[in-house]
Each structure stands twice: as structure tokens, then as C-alpha cells.
Image (cartoon, rainbow over the protein chains, first blue to last red):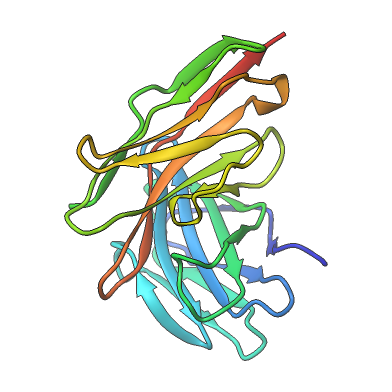
Length: 116
Length: 110
């Protein structure tokens, strides 16, 4: 079974631009979560989508948004990029509707975003 | 506020030595805790979860609510255990989210 895939793997943008990252979950998985990883803050939860609905949300500003399509693929958008948005963005997928406690999350390789 | 603290960033041991990776948490509710691992050039993956009471690759972790700790232990470290280890908890009651510690790099020397 193919793992979680993320595209693009690397991205360079300038301040003020916007960016869209894509995540394709493992086939059959319906939940997709997004995380930001930086050296200073570590891994931080952005949001989780299940059945095209945002189910849980972390403490990020409204510039960070996401969506999920009917095939469970998910996109994350960051508008008005800031230097501090430079990070590795990870997505993770899981199988069922029971939530993060009992579902195993499978992580993608990440998208490395650099904001200049 | 919920918080996960891994007080040591680096740990280096020799093969066959016991290993303990420390994790402390701050959470007002009943915590569900996890250990994730990332081997070199591999993806982040779940190692074990408290709710399952399982032992994976010889690692165990015991929840100590009195000390608010969830330390990861292995009696005899192997070179293939070298990796980044992240402790995490899930907040519950409304909005579930995974809160990670900042991670700890374990190096097992031959």
C-alpha cells in the first residue's frame, strides 16, 4: 500500500505570497492532519480534516487554512507568507472516525517551505 | 495549558546499556500519551501509545500520574535504536489535538 504523499517536497516563496501544499492520504484513510515543524517550536498541530470537514484546529492564525476533498486528499494554504512560516509541513492520515486517541497516524515525508 | 517537556535534547549510550528517555507533561484532564520515533531519513512514526500498554521493539513506557511523567525505557539499547524520539499527548474534550515535546536525539554507539 502506498504511503502518505506530499507535494511539492520543496518550495521557496517570498514574503507576502501565498502557498498551497497538497497531501494524499493512504488509500482508505479518511482523516488528514497537518503539522508545522520548526527548530524553535518543534512539531505543532495545525488542523485535522475528516470527511471534508475540519474536525480539530490548533492555535494558528487565520492565514493558515485547509480543505479536504471527497477523495480525502487535502490541501493546506498559507496566505501572506511571513519569514516565520519557513518550516517543514507534515501531514498525517489515519483510518477511521474514532479520533486521534485510538487511530494510528501515518506521516508523510513533509514539504520544506522556505520564505525569503 | 497542555505541555509536553522532554528535558534532555541529546542522549548517547553504548550498545547494551539501559536507556531512559524522559517525558513530563502538564494537562488538567486525563492524558493519553504517545511516543513517536523518527529514524534517519525516515518518516515520523508511532512507537507506542499508553492506551495499548504495549511493548514495541523492547521499549516500554509507564504513565506516572503523580509525577506527570511518561518515560520511555529499554533495558538493552541497540544501534538501530538511534533516532529522534518525540513524546506527545492528545488533548480531549471538545477539540482533540496532538501536542508534541521538542524531541530528543538518542545515539547508541557500538
